[in-house]
Every structure is written in structure tokens, then in C-alpha cells.
Image (tube, rainbow, N blue to C red; front, side):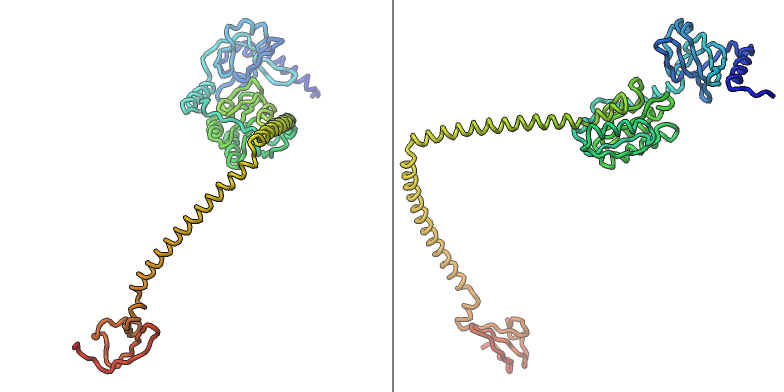
Length: 399
């Protein structure tokens, strides 16, 4: 058995495909994905997929120039072509010679319906957009820890705005687990007190960016406690998360630049404000000095010494009137106090005792009737100037 090189193997497979009559001309129906057209060559490259599989396809310029429509991702099309092998990569592909639209694909339709649902909920309303803080203290980044987008954002944030602290909330940005991972990271960043959140990833195919088209991420962006700057893919990539976010940036690097001010611009602004403040202060001092000089001249013209004498005389008269009024009021209050004191003294229990009366107690209980006493009881008698003890020896009836 001969030993083949990889090139020889791929060439052999290519020849076998070319010799197979069933592969020379095939008709397929599928959904377009990852469509691109080379600006210079005019060749179209895309994938054709159904619910379970996909295949690469190419349509060269000579055939693409005859198309009567512009192919777009999500379109379901009918195409005609041959199955060939791209020998360099060792993969088979469709060499498309003709293509006709056949409606909208399932994924594109689902995305359209999802957009309409979120639009009815008000997720795209401009009124919901929040202003970014001018000088955020805490900046959150929601992206893949291993992606180049993270390093780009960190580099720009460090250079432009070293005043703020940056916290990374790593998330899976593609695959089945990506929507939940991104949504959880956004929620954690909001609860963690971030003033602004940068969310995004680098470029990729429509499948790679699918997580940012999901409802779960849409809900998390809409309900985030801090303004969200979305930067998913390249400038030409658009997704639902971009439209709901408070601000869309064309790239992750641009998101970092939009989220924070430039420290050099801030320093320049501070210098300008300090210069303006110093100029305003000097101008104010000069204005007040001139006003003070004018007041000084007016006081000199108005014979200040005479005015002082007149004011002192007026003050002396007012003080005399005040002193007399206070003496009269104090005398009046003194008479009122004596009158009230006499009235209180007249009704005082002590005054009654001084007139010869006494209060009789049996075990701290005031005796109000002879019926309350028994022979042998010990009594306490309260007099005006003291107390004494007595005992009951006889009970006498009223005379």
C-alpha cells in the first residue's frame, strides 16, 4: 500500500467527487447562514442549513452577478450546483450555479417574532435609555475571560480612566449555556454596585452571536440596575441586545472609550477651570476694592464723626427707656408673685395646721371617722411643727 501525502489524498477524493454523476448537479432547499460577499472578487460564501445539519457553499462572481435578489441570512432558498472538494482544507462544498428565494427560514422567523414580542413590551423604547455617568467609580465588564475583547477593554480603560475601579464578571458568550451565563453576570454586576456595565464579545458568525439575540439576555439588559453599553461583534453586526442596551458601541474597544472620559481631557478641563476661576477671583477683588473706595469717599462726605455722636445719643435715650420699662415690668411681676404666694399660703395644709388643727393617721391612713378606730390603736398626729404618737383608750359618742 503506497504512502500518500495529504495533498494527494485530497486530490484523489476531489476526482472521485467529480466522477460521481449524482454529485455533478444537485437541487437543495435550505436556510442561508453566515453570508458574505467579497468586495473585490464578487464571490459569495455562505452556509446552507436545515434543522439538523449545514454545508458550506460558494457562488462565484460569474453566477452571482445573475442573481435578481440580495441573499440574506435567514432566507430559505432553492439552489442548484455541484458537490466539489476544496482540496486545500480537505472539505466538501457546494459550487452553486443558480439560487432562488423560497421564503424566510425558521430561525429568522423566530428572531422576527422575538423582536416583535419585545417591542410590544417596550424594550426598544428610547424613553427607557439611561444616560451614562460622566465619571463612573465602578465599571463592570461582562464578557469571556479568555477573549481578546476583554484585553482590549482593559487596556483602554487603564489608559483613559485610571480613576475608576474595573470589575470583571466572566460569562460564556457562545453555546447553549451562553444566554443564562450572560444574564447572570449582568445581574451580579448590577447588584454589585457598578455604575456602568460593558457587555460584549469579539466578532463571529451568526451562530456565535446567537446568545445576544436571546430573550434571556434581553430581559437581563432591560432590567439591569446600571446603564449597559453593548458591543457585540464588529460594527456591521447587530443583535437584540444592542438595541435594548442604553448605548450601542460598534466594537468592544469603542465601548470602553464611550463609557469613560479621557483622564488627559479631564486634567486639561481642570486647568482651564482653575485659570477661569483665578481670573474671576481677581476680577471680583478688583470690583470690590473699587466699590469699597467709593463707599469710603461717601462716608467722608457725610461727616462720619457727627453721625456717630447722633447715633450714640439716640442709643442712650433708647437704653433709658428700655431700663425704665424693664423696672416697671419687674415691679408689676413682683406684686403679682406676692399676691399668688399669699393665695397659696392661705390654702396650704401647713397654714391650716398652724391655726390649731391636726391630721390623725393610723398606719399611714388618714383618719376621717371615729368608726375607723378601735381601742388600743396607735395613732400618729401631724401638728404644724412636728408629729407625735398616741393610743386610743376610749371611744366617745358625738356630743
